[in-house]
Length: 235
Image 1 (tube, rainbow, N blue to C red):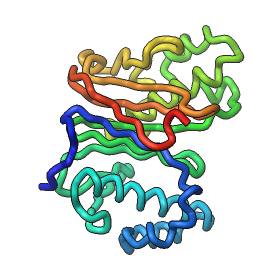
Image 2 (tube, one colour; image 1 turned 120 degrees about the vertical axis):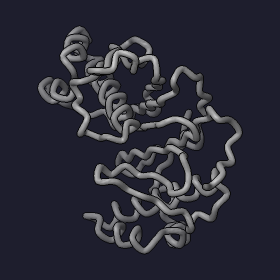
Image 3 (cartoon, rainbow, N blue to C red; image 1 turned 60 degrees about the horizontal axis):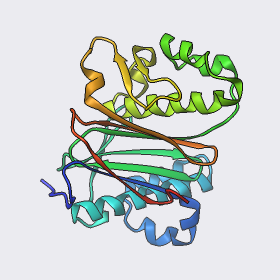
């Protein structure tokens, strides 16, 4: 079992970076990738997307190497049919989200974690309604038109982060749980069939850069985690 070099059992590390800024280092970064990862890079639908994907995966390897004390190139991943990625020989939980050339990456030693990053974009009201639960739709209907994009993408990133932390992706029905309304502290209000679930989870949600929202979901079982944000946060 890999031993984690973390300072706190409740520590959560979150990174945000623009892969385009590391293009000049692409060759060096690719040296830590596996053959399968190189092949996956080359299968991307455009060279630029492949470049950014490879840089992202290499930097994820580097961050995990710092936490585990293992060489980045020697880390072994497993990916299930839903695309949920885990690191062999450790209980470390991590989550990755991509938006354009950007990567958001979160790691926890002790709790299941999910992260989502999304650029705010114009959507019709029908497009906003379909991923939401009936309660969330009702809450969204009370939001003024100028705030609708912010409100919707707050819901969307929180819901995505939650189902990613569960490791179930969109196989978990989006109408089966409710997030708190826009303007309130981010929180889980209901999970169908699990009345105790809301007390087990901690959430963070913010507009981290103009027009970009990020959300974190962490299963804490009542514990208080310490979040540490790195690199592009706050710039």
